[in-house]
Length: 232
Image (cartoon, rainbow, N blue to C red; front, side):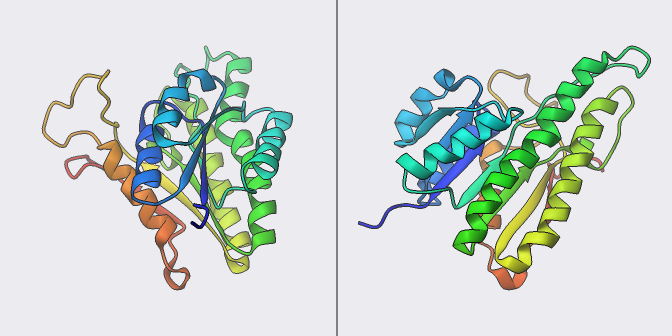
């Protein structure tokens, strides 16, 4: 039987990325590699999917290089789909922010995305195709009071995605940024005050799969997803 294409999710956890892993495996017909700073939390999920749970701190160039090298050497080559889902938040008044914490937020949201994109692009360009997706947020396009650090990181992520879409699309690599404009439903969080007040993670994941399956004659570089009752 032909080998299933490999999808890599960086910044994996038990929320949106778990739904992404299930949809890519079950509906997308892909093998899934889950990468996180704490892969032990992902092993049961990876086992259920017949996938991989791998360690990677996306802010460390050596970790990112080692992750892609491992996939090259031991798991049939580089991934055909890469989703950057890592994020770090920090709230606070500008007068009170710790510069070191702000730097960490920028490293996770933006610099880590660049490191992952660099390794992915090298392999996708050599292959002549691939899909690179970035998970954005409301803060990608709207800077809220008390959330300047997160907005800086997510604005930078969006800029990276837009620049890479223009750079890589003519060479056959599909790059897209997904604005998640609203809260994502999770069993450990309080439900929304009204029906459909939060985004369903499975519905989000199916939109990622739609991006992956888009024909190159009509690629999207960005989509926004929000509940129909969400103000924007």
